Length: 398
Image (tube, rainbow, N blue to C red; front, side):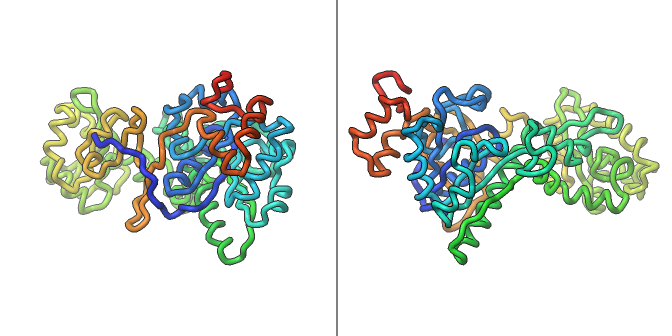
């Protein structure tokens, strides 16, 4: 298992300064993506942490905070306001994931921030967007995927719909879309010299991720007779004799022909020449269900492992990092004792890298304030006042 030793490599976003107001889910993920690509991300954390630190672990365990520097600060303390404005004036990007209106009430809304720093890219991450009847309502990943019409696509016919937690709404439709918007705005700002506000809504991002399914739906080819919706026997999961599962996806005719031939079914009347006839699918699926239960997953992978038949094992999160392909590409790394996905995608000339382990809360408070030009005495006065906290503060304000 490769171990990633964080190094300060110059990724494509080296030199980009990001201010991230600590939150949960997609905002931190967006900041992590930018940090992996070399951006200097300063995380403004509240003392005591957030629900995210309780759910995912804080300090070194917080994977989404890798590569960032932590400045623990009381956003409402009168002595902290000037510090935050100094950071904003020097920043290229700001990330916030509060409900609409919260940043305005704190005094750091987009109008004020862009007036102070016209080149600032102001990234806003919410579930429903900054406007609309649901803008002020709470929600979570599955809610956003549900209203986007995406959650329904994950159901087996007759079964309850569900989707992998956090992937569709929070991370893909949320954090990834916000990072994409920030990258686009940074590129445009190089030409115009002007910043702008990004309104990233998880519900809309989830819908955009499902563009291909909406395409099929508009053609009348979704639900019931679609090759991708769990109806087709050649695009499904099957349980093996040992209780493990296989994904079976020989979608294209050439892969399907090789698949049935490998199983000795090329001349079977249930399988020969009937691939795209839905009337045959229930019988085909029943036959395959019985067949795959006759051997273990390892036995089946010995049969299919060297083919293009699109048959692959369903791996757990414990097993995936151990797969030979993932090991060969070093797709997973260990940082501060936590196994996690490596940065992606891979750039040939300016590769991404984890710059440092997830910080302890307030680990970089002194460093960040001194970098703003404050004296050591001024920093200690701010710590004493409670405006900021430092992980190394001997008085216990950590």
